[in-house]
Length: 281
Length: 255
Ligand SMILES: Nc1ncnc2c1ncn2[C@@H]1O[C@H](COP(=O)(O)OP(=O)(O)OP(=O)(O)O)[C@@H](O)[C@H]1O
Ligand SMILES: [Mg+2]
Image (cartoon, rainbow over all chains, first blue to last red; front, side, top):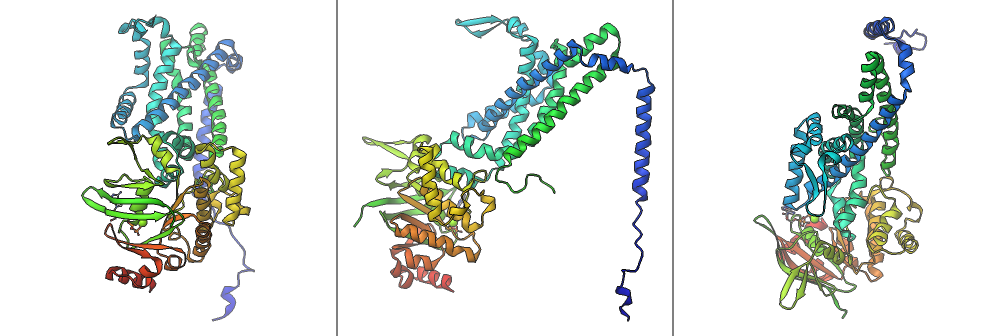
């Protein structure tokens, strides 16, 4: 046999054609063009969209949406951490209470829980510490308070499962090493276990914060003036329904985008000491 | 003879109906190096973990530095200690694990200062200076700011030894400190342990390194089936044991 068959340098290279990919991309682009055309020629007054983007009622709703996301998520995370620690604790009573909490507040729709909190006055006309301080429930349960409690408490049930997963992901050797240098339970959790669990906890929590931004729109049913609620009020008056819904969509997308970037930075902070800041390549 | 630092009397530990430790008795004096040898599953790790209260014992008692572990005596009654008091008792005892168990989110230096600063509430500057000294002593002066993931197994184990020493313990327990290491890294860790022994630290070392036991240990205990089958001066137990099973074990390990 001659050595000729091993020589390739004089041959011409013909790159392979990806016919399948080209066809698929072509179809999708065509559909996209049709969609854009539909919106462009449909009965949408784009000038209204631009006009209402910065309308005071919309901006106020935006602030309220952000405020509610922040407050409800704060409650959710505090409760989530608390109940996750209770769940894995050796105290059987605490552990059962934590299990029950997750069971109940994950079991009912968020909308239903909103209505329950908002209508609490029907069963408890007064709340407080009997004899010491008491308030009329209707005064306390403003739309803001009701939404914050309902959304925060149901969020805590989800978050506690996420946190529990994070705690379980930390090697038992870490708990032993922390005990061996004389740490008590709380210091061990705060200084050794939680910082390591954070790496596992953060990506799903980021997901949940973004979910919360959108779930706050449910609070419109109990008259909380978040952005969708305010957009609705405006379009009841001027009948520009789709325009105002697009305005609201724009702001939701903007908030979610900012949060996604924020999540990246927070995750980077807690990647301390790990070789791979990203899971893949 | 120096004073007794560790005293174990009839220590018994059960898992369900399996007896992992069966009335273990042991005395360790200040400055003594005691190696525990024995076949897998004989209860060596379990016994060490009992000395550090990582396991509760089901019978018997252990004293470290004259303090009864896990209980406080009041008149004729023994009161079980609260978690915080148990954590306080543990501070006198350091522990070095087979799998290092360094804190991965902290640098080598922070691993060593973590306990002194947050548990012992030492002044930060003093703790850092002490930690630097210790890391230099275990040969890691140039690796202080590295994270555990950036260190070799031998280096990680030396940081772990420095971490244990950072707590200024009366006693350090080692559970097979070199078993998880590549063969060429074993000696760097054993050298550090030898220095530590020469500096007068009291050490209990579970190990299969017979050379280390022979060269460094004062006493060697041979465990089998949850009991201390034979205990005595290192030379005697390793070269001329009374127990036939101990002789067979030493012969098998030397092969
Ligand atoms: N948490 C546990 N639950 C049930 N059994 C256990 C537990 N921990 C240890 N044991 C049993 O106790 C016995 C002693 O275990 P131990 O780890 O002390 O052995 P060892 O002498 O250290 O062995 P090795 O040389 O393999 O490390 C073993 O038979 C083991 O299966
Ligand atoms: Mg063992």
